[in-house]
Length: 282
Image (cartoon, rainbow, N blue to C red; front, side):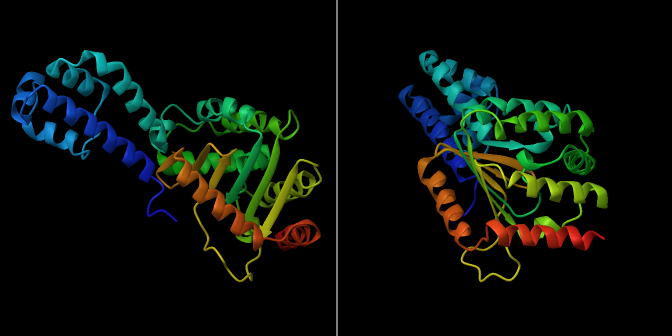
């Protein structure tokens, strides 16, 4: 596994920094001269060029103007904005509430034919009931200190989940058994959520596996991740969402999913674990 799921974002930032450094050298400017033209400190120029400080769009505009490289501006700003989408802090994403974040990924869900999802902490969003989603999102908002629009956000999450029943989509989902036991909401909420999992398992386009507590691990429990076909892996960290598009890293997550699938149980054995979890609520 890669040392950090944010490595793609850092590599992209370093590539932009390298291009900016190249423009400075082509303009035959020292870092100090560039800083004077941009109206900032030489230390800032150095931090940007060494990828220690991410360059803003305004920084890139000033840099290109100082180097007489306005022709590079559009490409650099586009690349910079793509990096911003690779590593997105939850507090920034949820600063106006969570409903918008649910809606923004609808096009990605609609375009994806094959979903592969692994969750070690909560039920995947596309399988959540509205009550479970509202309880979870309310807890997240309280922890992050962001506006609590959990009810409307949960409704949007349920609407987003229509891909389970519409279009030509296939779903392979893996849950750690702990997910069935963690209490999100009250007992009625958990009972409804676990019952929903049993119902979803009957869909012909859904494969749901559970990794038992007692299994011999081939892969240690990982952070939750979603694979959208073979073009993107979205990884959920405590502080940020990481969107990986580098083929080698997407392939690594696909490899992890494949190996986790081998230690999961499916069919009757998975249903038995879910039913046991329901019984334990009483």
